Amino acid sequence: MPASGVSRSGRILLFAAVAAVVVITVVRTAIWWKSDAGISFASGVMITMAADLTKGTFYRPLFGPIGYGGTRYFPLYFCLQALLLKLGVPVLASAYLISAAAVALLVWATFQLLRELGVESWLAACASLMLLAASSVQMALTTPQADGLAAALNMCGLAVITRTPRNRRRIFIAAVLFTLAWSAKLTAVFGVAAVLLWLLSEGATRVACLLALETASGYATIAVAMVAGSHGRVVDIFRACASGGTDWRFIANAPVRMERMAVFTDPVLLLFEVLAIVALFASKMWRSLPGLLLITSVLITTFIFGSPGTAQNHLLDLQVAAVMVLATWVARAAPKRKQAGVYALMLLTLVGAVELWRHVTTWSRWYHPHQFQQVIAAIEPRDKPILAENPIVPVLAGQQSYVLDPWMVQMLRKRVPGFEKPLLEQLRRQEFGAVVLSTGAIAETGAKQWFDENAFGPGFVEGLGEHYRFAEVIDRDRIYLPKRDSPPAAKNTDH
Image 1 (cartoon, rainbow, N blue to C red):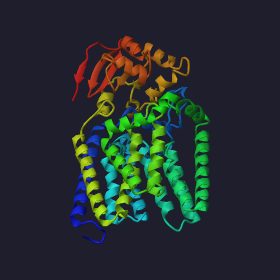
Image 2: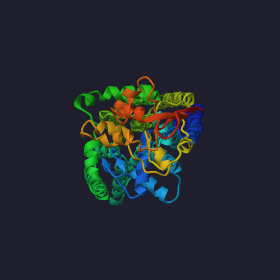
Image 3: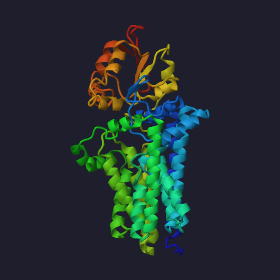
Image 4: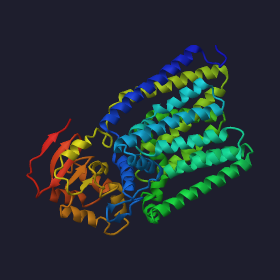
């Protein structure tokens, strides 16, 4: 038994399990990037906002000359992508580049934080790579959204502020990192919340007060910049969209909804979470930084699931917190418990590897292979705007998407009388050169209810069926063309 309290065989088995997860991650990422399977409509919204910014529009209005807006996204991710687009990086490549960099930064920051907390290098390295075992972290790689970037910046902030001495320079850098995390994702406050509670419990009241003040100043600076950059539009946008149309009944059901989401979309994360909670209470770590990070992450993520439209990507922070608790618990355990803890981590990681391999090419309604260029090529001529459920289609066609987020359209029309009328009138006049749907054909059973409740809202299916005809399906992207413009023949090019 080595000095670390873990046998060589135990370490080798843990290394092997982690290596399997890393290899599968590389394979899965290559497959998903090649097929663009992760470019859901949510990713399309983020990318469209970057494309808007390159044309001078920072947060388009709820409705205006270029069409429909409405979003809950904060700006850092799409501003970074807009910069890459200006530098000539292709649309999808730039999104994948930011996502990959964010996950790499998340792994590195987790390693650095664990080292600051006294975890041995080999265990910290394995634990940081264990993050990849969760589906939510895999999504951060393949489905461009801001969750990975926000989590990475939070962990960087924690790694900076835990290092001693905590001088003014270090406090300022941590505050900047926490501010950047918030500028990537509105709810990314679990890091600063956890560290403030930890500093207060450690008696570092002065450091906590300085960090809180400087972070709050950073938040205010970002808020002012958003208002000024959007000419005030962002205030109306977030007033209308931030809650997602929730109510108290929906909020009260948030814990159940979060648990169900984890069970059906990320069961490995649920295993990590349960084991971390057991370790938290068994070792009485709730006053430690990892323990407080887990507690704040659970509370804030539960709050997030109190809003409609919340998906599994928001579970990522729970995986980070769970891994932090498990790694520090194992590192501080007595030799026999430490050995058992390493074997438990190995089995948990191996389960994650098996689950990832089972679903390495598994697609769902929202995540499936796309042939965007083939879809665009099938739409001729392209002198009219393309209406697409996934706004990435018109962006890749060199257009400005008419509808930024179809989900927001169906939500806002419940609160704004006549909000949908311009869209339905455009359909009636056949002013779209094509309509591209990604989640189903309007002729399918239940499709009308789906679009009524999730995309565009009531009246869309009827308007599309009356004025457009189904022309072609490429993979699962269905193309509809104006009825008066071409013959009714349809062809199927499913792959």
